[in-house]
Image (cartoon, rainbow, N blue to C red; front, side, top):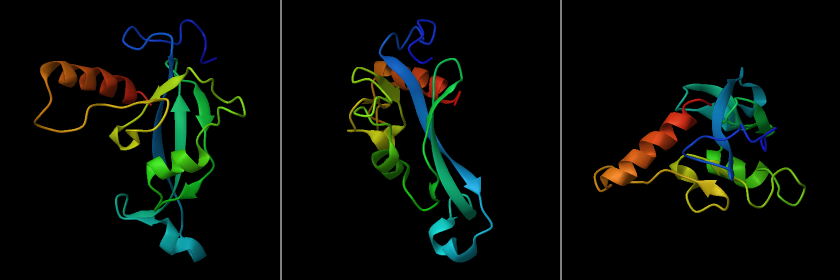
Length: 133
């Protein structure tokens, strides 16, 4: 239950209910090989996007997408719908920097050399939580 009162961290209380990331699932290729080959993984893959709560439970998972799809486009096309009741309007999730500008998304600060110490501290905490997906 992502709305459980124990499903929050001290850095992200109450409104933050999940962290999201995409991962590859290996494929043998086949007739869709051009759409499935991803040079990042040097293999034919499908991608799946998963939202996980602070307790480690999967709270949302998308359908398989071709391996050449960008993570943010998978989220835009298959992401949880607030109109179908999958997430409430007040809920936000932690994502990587590619999702910057999307609604109900908290991302780290972008830029390598121009962050303040406070921004870097926030990025470290955000990254620590996201690494648990």
